[in-house]
Image 1: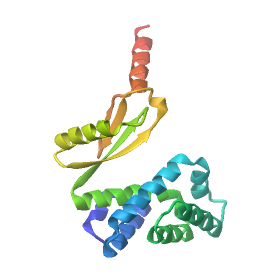
Image 2: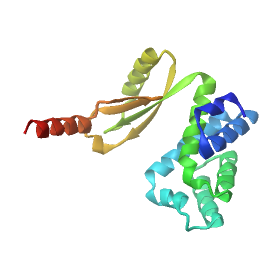
Image 3: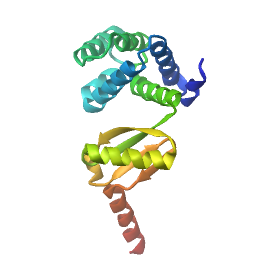
Image 4: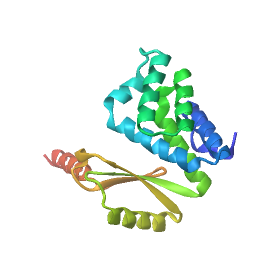
Length: 186
């Protein structure tokens, strides 16, 4: 197995490495990366889809057929749909999101990039994303790709994760810390 596979481990890591090697062999790394982003967005946006991939009750054929229909409607490439079918046949859909994360890590590692997960209360503008990407590039010393998500429960601010580092400047966390300090003072 390639040296990039050390970035991820376990079942998800093995599947991610297999998809990465297949995409690399067919020169479709970017196409599969776009598909992976679509799959992660679908999983994040749909509780029903998350239940479908996590359900041990549904048979592999039912899970596979349902997921195939969703992915085809979303415009996911044939290579990624075939990969998802294999994952469904092997009853490993419960780690599909982790496989997607693993693929992204392998791709970033191969390109000498780092991925920063950004969670904000409201969507970032293009100018804010560009500014944040530049700041992170300067701080990390390498190209940084942003993966942004919106979580309204943050109230304001953002959470930035790059590798094992995390900076939480969300209003929610600041209010929680204030609440704890007030309880300690009473």
